[in-house]
Length: 103
Image 1 (tube, helix red, strand yellow):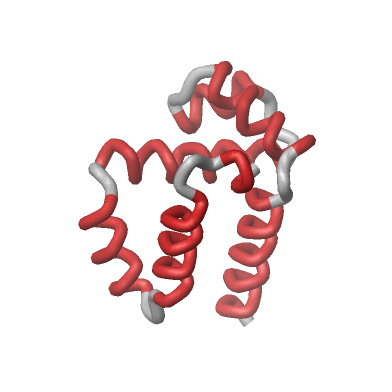
Image 2: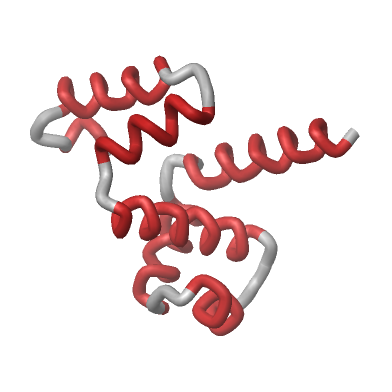
């Protein structure tokens, strides 16, 4: 997908910048500067919807909980089914991290 991006070098630099963040506070500060509150909220909603899809929840359940459109849920589902695996990777890592913290 990134090969089709107009500004691939700039996009890769953004990803390296994100990977350079060392703490949750640095991450909060960077994204607060980078994104609007709405953009951050939209991304958080998409992640929650992906998590719910992977748990087997229905579109109806997701709409009620996350308050996003079925079109957006469908797009997220397409990414989960046919995309690069990004949602699945992040969600599995977050669950593993939560499990370790609870031990």
